[in-house]
Length: 162
Image 1 (tube, rainbow, N blue to C red):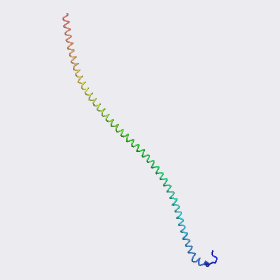
Image 2 (cartoon, rainbow, N blue to C red; image 1 turned 90 degrees about the vertical axis):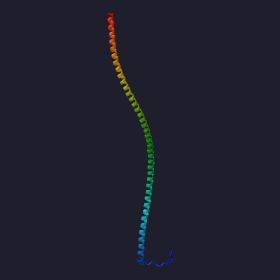
Image 3 (cartoon, helix red, strand yellow; image 1 turned 180 degrees about the vertical axis):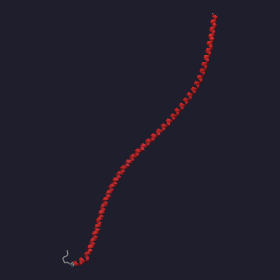
Image 4 (cartoon, rainbow, N blue to C red; image 1 turned 60 degrees about the horizontal axis):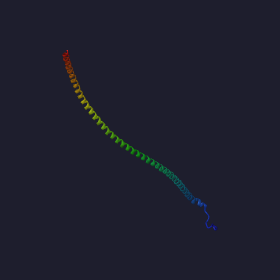
């Protein structure tokens, strides 16, 4: 508290003419700086809000990526198992095809052997048929000769008995 009043009185005219424009200019500069700082503060607040939103989006993306990765691993495991199963089926099929080819070749060989035997039998039967026909013709000729001899003998016996 100033009881003695050591300070001289204020000269308002000098203040209004010289100091006040300086103070006003300084206040305007402070006002502008304050506005800039408030803008900076709101920018910082906006950046913090954006950072929080980005963090939430990142966490969401990480969770989604984790789910997608788990799903992809599961599908990959299923596809791998299916691939192994198909490989095993393909090997089994190839083995069956090879067995079938061997069996088919064996049957083809057996059929060829049967055809050869049938052909051989047909040839031998044709030869036998020719021989039998020849013998039948000879038998018929011999029978005719025998019949004529028997007839001649019967005629002689009949001539003797008369």
